[in-house]
Image 1: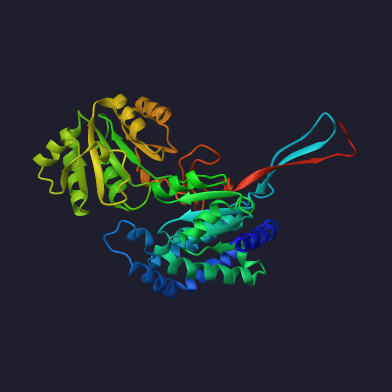
Image 2: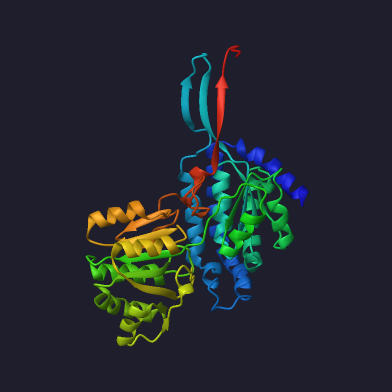
Length: 412
């Protein structure tokens, strides 16, 4: 294992010296290679899918359709077009001593990423790390092993074509002993980024000897305030829940003002029922859903609030105004993405100011919390912590700082 880490560390020195245009060419070449390999990627992906129950909430995350594979290629070209952060001068001045001082953006070095289920992460992470002058060590889950291994083989073919050491993108075996070794490889790895379930993130946080940036679980709320356009609110709630429930920016809990609950809930029924969304309702909302004959209805337990469903399930609660909604979010939020639907701009601004989350929305779906949707090209994940990245964690956060001082003999 140590030999693997040593080779990746050595490769990182080469990647750090690549100029911007070479890195961009590598990504464009990889995009074309992926497009030409769509059929084989789907063959390998099906091997993974065949091992998973289609009803598993991770199945959709694992699935690589032709459109999603094209999305990988498109994202690579988008990242290639982004401004290279490496070498950017962040500060420049002359000190009283006459020394010329600069603060310059510099690659992190070796980035370790531990993730589950999603083979698209393999390409996104490798691309972002290469563009920012970093090497990457990827530790994917066994459920995506066939997909990940084939995608990394395409990356290696591209790197070799440009005479870049293939160890610059290293995929570890799925055996868990490699996870433990990676978390203790502080001599060779500069930062660890876990992307996956709360259990995975907690394990990494508890066991890593290396600084960790969490891309945390999403427990996302949408609060509908009494002045909201209720047709808009219903469309946003349905969109946030059903378009892709297995991702971290999907809706988990709808909070509905008691003054509009009777009118709003019937407006979301058709959209929920079409996608067979199971509703876990508090006492007040349960009565309204029941009166409207909603078939997939259950009474919520306290544990159903603050839960990341990652499935066609949602909890619903009737609240008594903004203060009640804010208190519920503070108690149950994972600090990922929170939304308010309201026509009252002053209340919207208060919500934006008081809610502690990486992304806060007014009159829009939380499904937009995504590096590509934010114009960042791609993302490593959504960071729910505050240091050193928060929200979509993308290219500009994959660098650190180096102070450069140029003198002509000054001593102190």
